[in-house]
Length: 538
Image 1 (cartoon, rainbow, N blue to C red):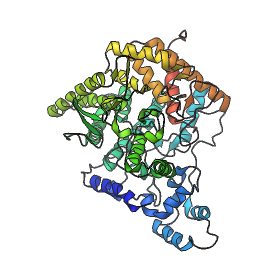
Image 2 (image 1 turned 135 degrees about the horizontal axis):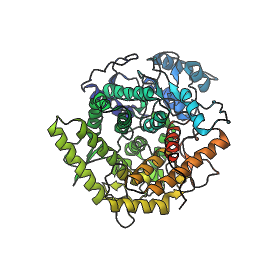
Image 3 (image 1 turned 60 degrees about the vertical axis):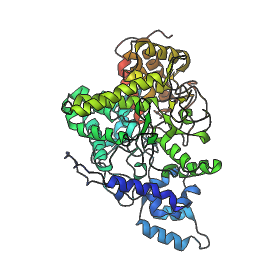
Image 4 (image 1 turned 90 degrees about the horizontal axis):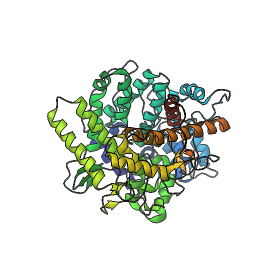
């Protein structure tokens, strides 16, 4: 691989290193020193040809395993030994790697379920298994250390994940784990302060991108239980989070970073600063791009698809079917712009003293509502669709991103009624709501259902009075979770909602157990359902 693929990372580090670093607020545990991206050692940079060879040779079945390994010796010493030994007769690459790196464990996979416990009791028992203590800064590790304890999803996901954490927190709140919720919010504020944004996860290889900006919803969740003081604690972090997503908003034409200039104002897209194979999916990306001669644009679109959290989905494909046609950065997503509307709404509330900032926020909120109604609204089918800003038209892909404007109360009643009807007619399945209507083999398409999208759909429908449909979705999802738990003793990352006898599938890795957001949404929906009796099915 050419060293040119590393240049975007260096540029990113130099840019962020020049930004002002706000002093980290004191907390009750250790206070880790500030770390800028310029100080982060990237494992692919450090190992050079050795990294490429290990990943392309599939020394580990999962590309993520190697980037999560901890080096037993300094990187330069390992690469020197590799250059010395690689041409010797009988050189064994895997044996070399195992001698020089510590292989990470898979979180919760070996947890022995007590099947005499209810599903709720099982989830409560899993919190300590999925909990990580505050981190030490370990030389030779890709982990970005966090000062407070946190919950990981489980399986191959050994670190905190950004948008996962909101849905995990829903369950932590039901379990009364408010201290842990606060700890996790402090960790995210720490990342904003030290990295400049909340990365996809607390790994060095994730710093070129973020994930759907749910930090605002996490803060609102805790504030609902502990009062307005929570907003004061995190207001500066929330503003910095917003500044990250709006960096590039002064452009006059086209797109810059996460921002796209439209005739209705600045909208946002998913955007990863890198344009090389993802380190944690190096072989998959490299072979995918080489097969179609996709170049740097395709690498960036794959990376940006990962930032969306929907990696991968027909939402991002030009032909709606094949990942080879991915074009994530050409799309203005409904969900992202609704999330940023929600962040702007809270910022208006918590920064009353800054009138100019409030006016700018209110103008952007109005523009987002107009854009979603004028450009993303499909009046014929009664749904919101993502907008292809390059081609100047809707993508035509139906997905549960359509519920985000309902969740954030951006729709009018007629639009919400139409979305509810479409969901009931097309997305409602035996086990809940399906992610899209397309069967592509990708994990964020049919037949899979995902916990976060069940929650967003249910809350969005409730906001507009569609309580019966919301409750039916909750009942079916909870029943599916309980059925899988009864059969396997596990909660998993995703579920097949069309055929309750089959596992969810698709994607770049096997179905993971644990699982943070499935656990959290299950507990929250179980509590919701226990408030009243069951609803007669449609």
